[in-house]
Amino acid sequence: MEIPYTTTVRPDTGLTNPKLGIWLFLASEVMLFGSLFSSYALLRSGAPSWPDQSSIVSVPLATLNTVVLIASSVTMVMAWASLKSQSLPKYRLYMGLTLLGGAIFLVVKTIEYSDKFSHHLYPSTNNFLGLYFTLTGLHAVHVIVGMIVNAYLWGPGTRMWRSDPERFTNRIEVAGIYWHFVDVVWIFLFPVLYLL
Amino acid sequence: MTHDFARQVKKYLAVFGALLVLTLVTVGVSYLQLPQAETVAVALVIATAKASLVAMFFMHLKGERPMVTWPLGLTAFLFVALLAFVLLSEADHLIGTRFADAFASISD
Image (cartoon, rainbow over all chains, first blue to last red; front, top):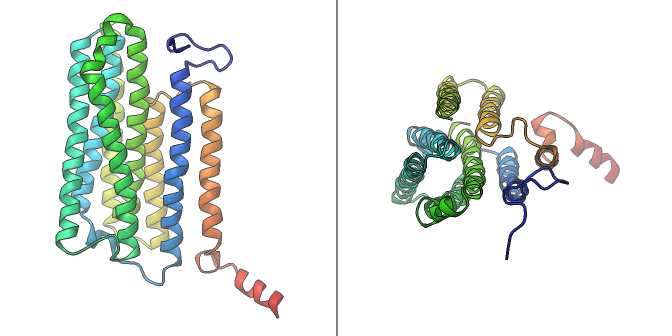
């Protein structure tokens, strides 16, 4: 089946269908994370006392992860720009770096989690840790999903570059918009869970 | 085309630099031990600035079609409304309203 408006703009929306689709999906994602952020705000503001977050979680590791995820956002947008300038090898390089960034982020996250567990800190320990594991866990799932999509587009998915380069370029842009959203969520999670 | 790519890269690297600086600032400010309200305000303002940079330049929201910006604006409004309504239940001790007193006088 032919999917309509993957490269040509649909006259009534002024957008290609994938572009509109990803933004509507992300709008629903904002509300998903929004419900968890507001749970955090309610539980914290209603609590008689709250643990000193920065003494439980590792600010240096989280700062490193912030830099890693931002860097992977930059390489992702470079991957798209590479296709715009007709260079598949450059695209592969930048997309590969994006995947590497995602992998480093998850390794650091795993180190953080195992450090918590080794100190017998679990989601059930207190409200803060419950929120910490729920929010960072859901975010990590988003990183993993993004990496699966990006890995496909880095490997077998590049076949489309030969048959329909414009559509492939749009795919990378849409995958990129999702990846940047994952970055934006982390940009808020970082101060809320580590610095406040 | 090559020249165009070089210009794009320059722009993205500039945004990257700004994001790194803002990350350092937000971490630095957290060590200043400011009062709670100021700490929250500074952290959220910086996070919003960083998120805006990512959205504008990496997600190409700058100059995007109304069919994207309007639903997104509505989502942002609903997100803030969700947060505000939830926090309203804690307004008595957060901002010193006296809802509890008001309800107590009704039940008397």
